[in-house]
Image 1 (cartoon, rainbow, N blue to C red):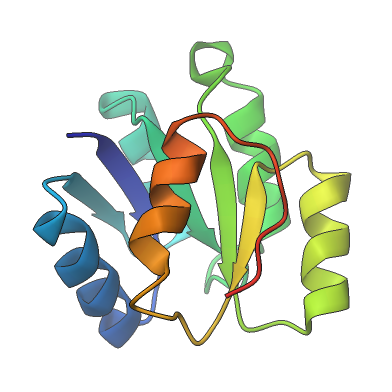
Image 2: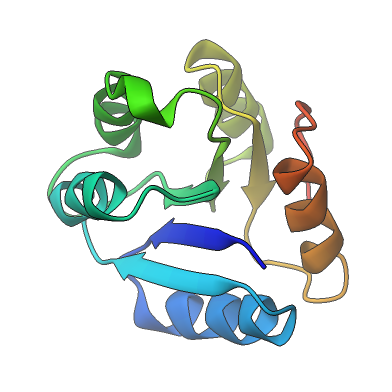
Length: 128
C-alpha cells in the first residue's frame, strides 16, 4: 500500500481516482488547490504525487516547482494528470522533470497499472 497525494480541484475526478486507487489498497490524501497540496506534502510525505495542471490558485507548474524545492521529497515521483493537448502536456512533463503525464479522460482499466509503474520508479511519459 502506498500513500498517494492527489492535488485536484474537480471533485468528480477526485472521486474517480479515489475509487480506483483505494480498490488497490492505496491511501489517498487530497488537496483541492496548490497551496493545500504543498502543505499536505509537508505534513504527510507521500510515495507518489498526482497533480492536475490547472488548479484554481496557481498553475501546476508553480506547484511542481514548490514541491521540488522540498528536498525531503527527492525521489517521490510527480505525475501530471491533465486535459491539456498531449504535445503541451508532455512538453511540460519533460521541462519540469515529472515522472510522467496521464491524459484525461482517465482509462479506468489501465490507470492502476500506470500508477504501479510510477510507484516502481519508472520514468516515462504515458498517455491514457
